[in-house]
Length: 520
Image 1 (tube, rainbow, N blue to C red):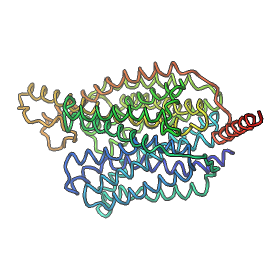
Image 2: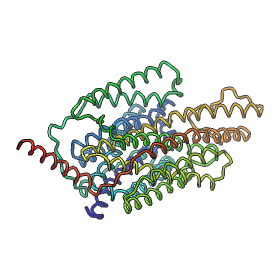
Image 3: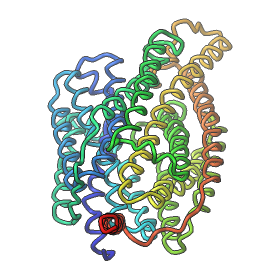
Image 4: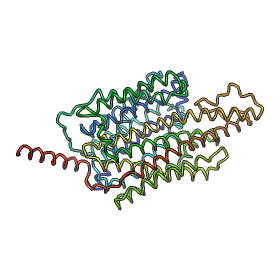
């Protein structure tokens, strides 16, 4: 395919990715209003957030496997269609139960978009040329991440629109993506003989992953880390996943081929993706809260303050991609990205309530540069080292473990943040001679700073500043482990044929082998 044909085909993919990112970010500032309007509880707030994340993370491997068996273009359009249905249900919800269900449907669609977009990219673009298109992914990611909270805040604050448009706004983009894919994406239909879906393996994987994700999401909030609920959920999750491994090793068409982990590159990039998820998403998800509580910024300004990190990610992913496509050398960028990400997290572990925005911007930009060089190129390394028939499985495994790491990091570090804030506030209030009993420092909701008297406000700002710095300090060793993992990845030359071309070559080789066997 020419560059023009590739860019035309990517237009639908980018619109779909924008929809997936927007779905997760546009409701960030609107959720308090949504929950209050529906008369729901704090636990419902948690489930509205968790439902989409659970569905997306758990279904990514299924979409990846389906892409190895069936038409990728059709699957992409199906995932977009599910997203449209989920968005409409969410927008018309008059009860929190329907809203949570609709978020599950949205999450399943977003899981398809997350897995399939990168699979299709690998199918139509050779690894040697793939790097220079990573910047487009970075641009879409940056726009969706920055614009989402801003758009959500504007919609909620506009009386004649309201929070329902936070869900409706993604529908036209999804429909546009479906139309663009139909017109621009040309993929041959590869029919696999006797293609069967491993329903038992799929059920065991989804059930096991959901049990563990529910545990890390609710532990520390709804129940203690050391409790019977923890024992029940972790025990059930581990047993289900052990059973899944047993089933997957013995079925002809496994959802996640166990043999794929015999590939050293896939195993190491998977571990690195998990650690990047923990370090990156687990640490940065609380930055908005730090901006609003510790620095006293509005939600809109807090959204804009994350721009240095997003710009750093965008620039580094674009430049590194261009250099990789030009030289064919990629490992040095993985190692450099891991080093810079570790340094960025270490710098952010020094912030407090008095840190200037200039210094904070530098620290965030350093982190963004490191993540931009590392995250997308881990996928490139894995895709380059697997047979074309396993591209979907390999890509979805990396996306799955990155999302899993982000969920685990967010949940565990969230519990650390709550305990640290409560401890610091109690200490500060006692030192100021203010009764600290019944303080809500451990709550997950952001305090209303405008209602606090000045002495208490300063104590809260200090507590959140110290606690947020601790999160980055905890995330830094995870980044260091990612660096050690990346060092052991063996660099191999980037292939110059696309996934579809390689698949045709593999099919031709198989046919030739069969004919030789019959002749002999």
